[in-house]
Image 1 (cartoon, rainbow, N blue to C red):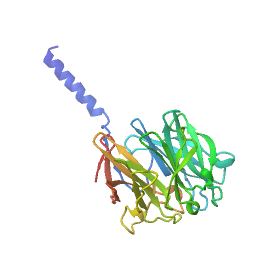
Image 2: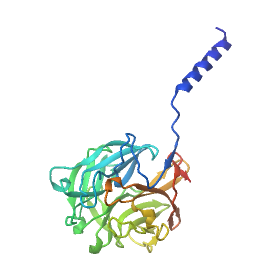
Image 3: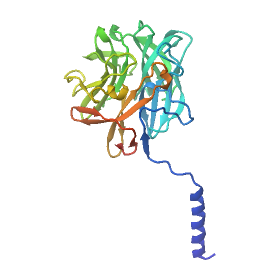
Image 4: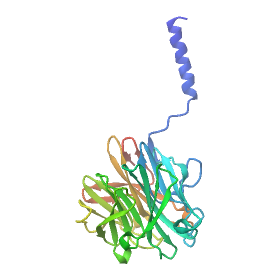
Length: 332
C-alpha cells in the first residue's frame, strides 16, 4: 500500500473513532442557585449546613442528611460525603458518619454543620460538628477522625469548649497550618474563636470573642480574615453580615451587610465560603442554605461568587453563573 493510501486510511479510521466518541466534558461548570440539585445517580443531594475540602483536584462536600425531615423532627441521620471535580456534577461517595444506637449520635439527637480539615502531621481528616438535642440542652462540639476523606469516621466524643456552650460551628486552617474552631456561645459569650491543638482534635486556647452571630464562615485573602455570620431567626432567613481583620485575635471591624438590604441574603443562610483556587485566580464562593422548615430535606442550596475588594465584601444574585475550577475564574 502506497504511503498516500495509508494516510487516507488512517484519516478514515480516526474520523470513525471520533464520530463514535462521547463528547468531551466541558471544563466550565454551570451553577444555578436556589433550585433542586441532584447527584450523578439522580438522587437529591443531602448536604445541608455543609462545608468542603479539596484533595488533589477533587472537591469533597460534607453535610447533613435531612431526608424526610421537618423542623419538628430534625434528628441526626447521616453526615454525607459527595465528590466533584467541577463543582457541578456531584457523586455520592458514602455516609461518612452514621447514627448509632445511643450517645451523641443516637436517636433523637442533633448533629449539625459538620466541617472537615486535614492534619498534615497525623495524616488524619478531622471532622467537628455541633452536638445537641432538640431542646438545646446539650450544646457541645463533637469530633471524629478518619484516615480517608470520606470515612467512615470514628467518633471521639464531645466537649463544651472551655466550659462554654457551643451551637453553630466552623473550622479554619491558617497559612501556617494552625487549626481554629468557631463556636457560637450566644448570651454566654458571643461567637468564640478557639485555636485547636496540634492534631486538631482538642481545644488549645481562646483567641477572640466576636459579636453574637450564628452560622459563621471564614476565609482569608491577602493577609486579611473575613467572617460571615447570620442573625438568629430560627429557620427563617435574614440579612447576614460580615466583619474583617488582619489579625484573628483583635481589630475586628464593625459588622456590615454583604448582600442587598432586605434580600435576606437572597433568602439563604451562610454555611461556608469555598476558595476556588486556579491557575489564573481565586474565586471565593458563598455557600448558603435556603431552609424549607416543613421539608428540610428539599431545602435548596444557594451558591454565588463573592466580590472581595480590600475590606469590602459583597454578594450579587445571578440566576445562573459559570466557574472554571482549573483557572479559578468565574463569569455570568
